[in-house]
Image 1 (cartoon, helix red, strand yellow):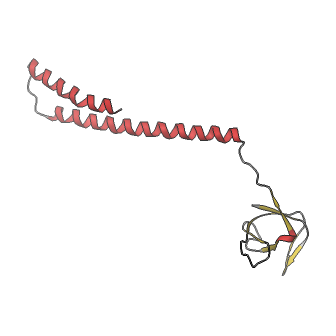
Image 2 (cartoon, one colour):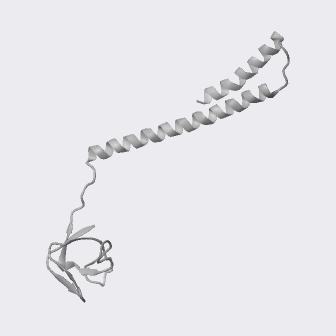
Image 3 (cartoon, one colour):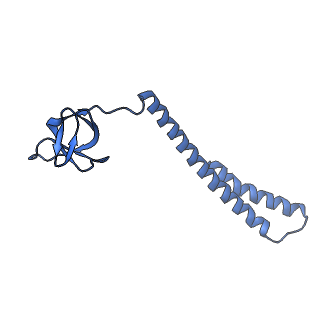
Length: 132
């Protein structure tokens, strides 16, 4: 959160001038006065009593429309990556299955053997295709 100084504050040798803006965190101690601690910049760690400053409203980085568009784009990208991952795994499994058959010793040019090999490849590919 950010605060703006509404009056000059002096602590030791440090002076915070009226109008300065700081990034702070709010103390949540019930017994301690309403205070903030600077968390960024040259004065980081310094405590400021609440009556020396006002809280600034949060600035929106994106409009609601831009946020929704970015969110949809992220979801679309996640779906595409998941689909690509699944398809890549299927391609690797098919390649592995087909590779085993071509690593087997050649049975010659007999039409029956070629037909059996083709049927084995189709039988291996169809279950993977159905998964996709």
